[in-house]
Length: 572
Image (cartoon, rainbow, N blue to C red; front, side):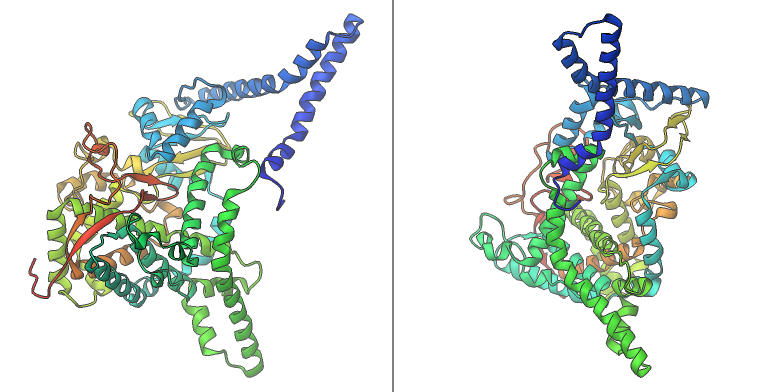
């Protein structure tokens, strides 16, 4: 279907249904003519054809609702409360959600506050049963796992990639060290020039270079381009820098994720919004121009290594090492170079945004909570000193660092929303002792860990406050009594394979950052500030940055900071 506008594909897929409706209207008119003995007026014929479509939709919606209500009652359950909509099909809800995504509002939070932790957000005549209830998310991810699918292809990819994420690989810090040293040296140089640093951009480059070397055995060199300057500065106007291939790749990947978020809100009807061209495909073409040569080289190396083994009985050392030590090589080995799952490394690569998001918001919090920064830096220096490279055991020993990372993951969950589709009818536990909730088959069920992590009834009255000690002191009882209230990496069979890799990468970079710098402050003269700052109660009023999300959470226009370089005599 390549080259065909998405809108035409959408219309084509529904032509048979449209033809049946028009044929039914025609048959009805013919029966009327036979009974009356004369042809009906033109206005009646035109009205019959035009009204057949909305009438059929209305009948289908009513039938589906009555069927689901009957099935729920038969099981002693109820349907999830539905968001009230003024327009047919929930078109006003769709507009509200789309505007909220563009304007950095978590609009689903308003629905949950009004209707409760589970709500049916009906958009484009399709049910989306959103939940922030731990027991429901537990059902999706664990106890009723087989009833909610993400898709067959991701399952296939997980089966191949799981063996690669062993302890000896995720605790191998050589890659982190090389790219962290490069990144932090560039930060020091930029600060000496008198400019603040966009920490988010810098750490995205660090994680991109680390991820591509870890996964592909070949670094894309995004740090080699240099760090960004503030837009209003003279160096910030450099077009050659903006159009560098690695920067084009990063922007295209981010745009594809943003469009994916908007597309998911429209469900199967997204082609109407992208009628003439597939916008994600255009972004992914940019990404493929960057990644495809690496994939091609991997397949060629597999072929050369195999030929070497057949002709000489020995594999080439370089090729064999690549095929054993990288995820890409592992995937090539698994598939023998046939039917290679190109989207598997792409999926793994987009996972680097989760680590970058975590580090971005963690440093944002350190810029706002100097006592946390001081305590965390004291732990780092007491454990590894001001220059020694941390080991895997050092990282495990730093309990406060893990608490700081966890608190960041709680308050600023990198993947704020996720979604599954019910494969069969299911029942979720009732809320607050109420009746069970019926989930019809083939229904989208988004769930928000982000919103669940901020619920005061789950985390206590101070849930809006950034306080790492909640993962150490008596407040830990909230989590130990209900582990499913904290799920930054999902849980059950679908738990994130890169969880420990992400913890290790974030911890390693933090150690090197705090060995290098002793103070962090938000560059408020450069930073784009949140319009909600200092207005009313709640977490939004505390934010000094604009927080947005596509597939992952990020700071709009970057996180601009100034940092004070540490001296060897620093004793915190």
